[in-house]
Image (cartoon, rainbow, N blue to C red; front, side, top):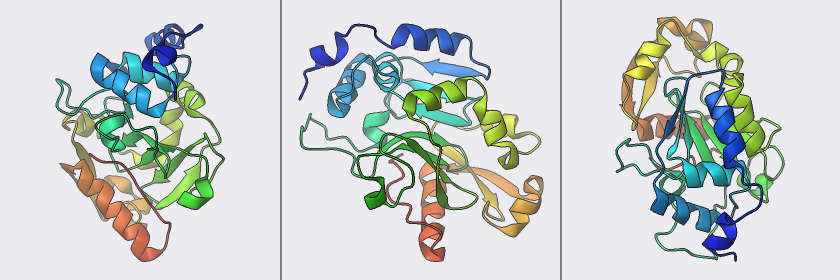
Length: 242
């Protein structure tokens, strides 16, 4: 196991390049302030270095709010901090003290969207976690199909894709007129619940006619996971703690 010094004192750190990408992003991105103590704790537990995009986000940011907060990319933040956005440690249930034997068996949850979509970085055995894709690739739990989708890219590729505007086309069928205002009114702990549900024929036919309300994010995630299990659409597994 590497020490925090070995993880942070690296040649060619990813942060300068990532900082430039954030400044030139094609979509609105808010960079949340870093929590140095929590960032270092998360970096030590994940054992990734500051040379990686994941390490840079963890060490230098409290996370990212993409598209006005529609998508929350987790960094080294804390839910009890000034921004109220949880970090990798809380979302993934990291042990309070560094434990070299602990790892996220189902993969690392790296992002949530307000509809209950979940982005996960696959671990070493995705099939055992009932996830598609290869180890080290990002997969997405889609709230409209209740199934996992392989994105075919790693974490750094995913961040680059988001910052280049990839979310615009990705969410085209899951946004309605006025989604920006509804998203802006959410607190960091809330998501958007729709009725009829996103996976219904009615919502698929015309999402703008659904009834929508702000609810705790854990409720959005829990409802989707329950329906996925009941219908056999997928084995959702761990979707993060919020």
